[in-house]
Length: 397
Image 1 (tube, rainbow, N blue to C red):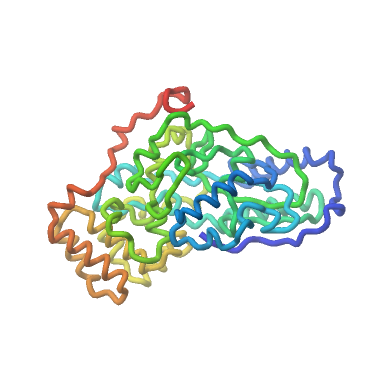
Image 2 (tube, one colour; image 1 turned 90 degrees about the vertical axis):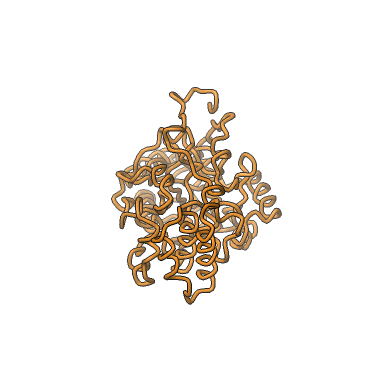
């Protein structure tokens, strides 16, 4: 998810108009201002990411990034903030809850193969502009207090290791599924950063609390979490439905089920998400009934309808062609019916070779529909998932 960052040129540190002793007070005010702007938590870290750089290098060497060439395009800028933006001394990390209120239960949607599952973060408006605007306002508050200073704001807008920086800033730990988890708030939140040249005092990194729990690893439909903290993006449904622009591998298609944009399974089973809070941001509320829309309904959208209904949405970035590709796979995984075959047939001669190929695969599945039930991997209803009664339990500490 790429977008432009906000820029202000750095000036020499000697121009800083406040005494070093006052930086602790400024950091406290930054946290207060951040909460007033709607961020649930604000933390500050230094720029060292040596261990994470080594981990990223191994991951790239193993080609686990798939077709995400941007992951290696910028060299060490991703793990060395001062190389990405000269003069950076500290990173202010923020998080904002996004789980939309009043949505259809996720497991109910996953359990009905005629419905389309859209990752919870994409049900409302795109978060990039909202969070960048709030970060800009935070920078403006700082400038009003101390005068001009150097900064740059990021929200998925550059090669930034946001989870590692947020961990170092005390916002949470990186779980076995590679998402950031906060002990008191779970993992349903967005991250953003303000790179700055201010020598603010840093926060202590968060401790890890996954313990022996492996629920995220066990539940992954495609077994993309190959080991604790090791994700093979080439198997990840979020990668396959959002980042991949070519054909979805044949062997993985049945495992996608009805997930047409992203996947939340590893977060849905995480015990720490019993502490997650629903978002209070109106912009993150579900739009166009995407929390319980039928596959047939969405597959019938014209290209104009797609761009109209995804205006201001993160979904738009995959484009209409991949939208139809993803839904065709989900329809191929759905129980056989004349309505589904008819819907697929409307796209059997689509102008896009990519769409046609996935539609033909889906139609072939329905031509031998008894096999679908055998190799389709469905998730258990939420009632079958036992969450711990308290945070002290045998699976996580």
